[in-house]
Image 1: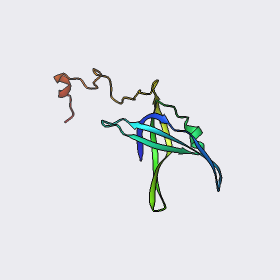
Image 2: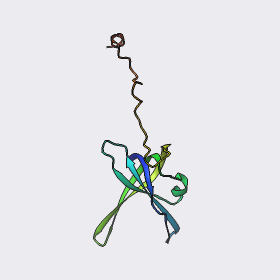
Image 3: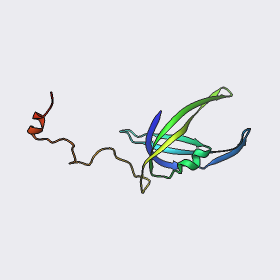
Length: 120
């Protein structure tokens, strides 16, 4: 599953000691770039925390694995980022990427001669 959005918050890094040695986890919140934006909490584990070097305002495309675990009859779900690509970086917290060309930069001519050149 892939999610594209803007990093709006970095939560405090968590560390601990497990059976396999020390671990670290960084959770971050992104806001999707849809008509009705949604906020999603994602987590990065281990070496990926240092690899991604996230900052508030980064526009990212994140590949996510969902995992649920049962504990005492309740289910807990986590969205783990396993791949992250930075699309761009904003200069402020409210900065958003825009996939649309600016008005007036339409890729097709609007005159009638252009419509006569259609191959069908």
